[in-house]
Image (cartoon, rainbow, N blue to C red; front, side, top):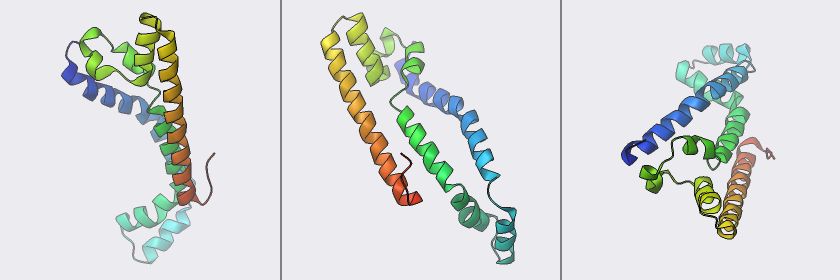
Amino acid sequence: MASAKFFRPVLVSSYIWRQMGYGAVIYVASLTTVQPELYEAATIDGAGHWGQLWHVTLPGIRSTIVTMLLLNLSHVLLIFEQVLVMYNAAVYDVADVLQTYVFREGVLAGDLGYSIAVGMFTSIVSLTLVLSTNKISARFLDEPIL
């Protein structure tokens, strides 16, 4: 990457592309658990396609949606290798995520104490995100995932 202005769009689009296949398989598998009789009952009750989606499909795969949200949110801070592959000095100002910053300061610059402190901060932020998502999932699923 020679230009910093394209780094973020390329990173986001490559992350979405990488996760799309896995997510599609999980969601399609989850859709098979929704009973066809529920769609028939919704049709008899006068629900159109959007009504079936909103009142049958989404509640049927709600646990999968929340689980995938938890997994994807925990992956937000763990994109080290994807950023490192596209990393160079021209994009340091826009490309640094916490893990690449720890790598650059600790391994390349030799400041291990500082990089360990930043790594601990990253762990605390990750734990906070996962616990917050778990609390939110408990509200939607009536039971926590973790």
